[in-house]
Length: 144
Image (cartoon, rainbow, N blue to C red; front, top):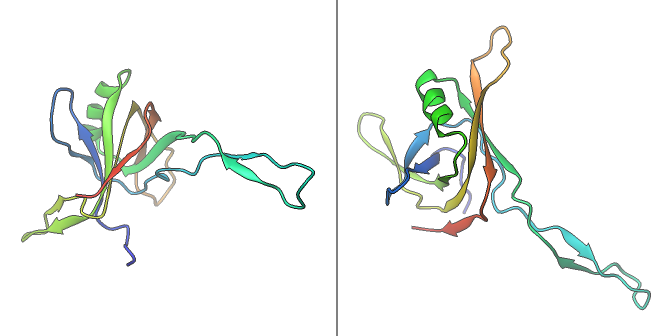
């Protein structure tokens, strides 16, 4: 089964909340669950390199968004503290064009420090912004 990127959602769980809500519409999403570094354990008894998995580097997560001053302000207020985020794959389209995030094809949850920035702009382009999350936990994958 192949999936399109349509219906990919950036979710946020407010402090003390039990449920995630959609934080913002995104135009791009980073890699999730990156592969671990591979440690070379080769020796001279073999004619090939041998590797074992090492540490995973979750890196910073950058999400592209169209500029929205309300969303920008909301995320700006979140800066400096760790928050719970998730990327949900899958949604249900409803009458009137509203789409409800379901995560039916996977949910990748993680925590981190958010930082929002307004991107540079060029003639004839949309105004955009980038949310960068300094991750503090490994991804937790689930399917609902």
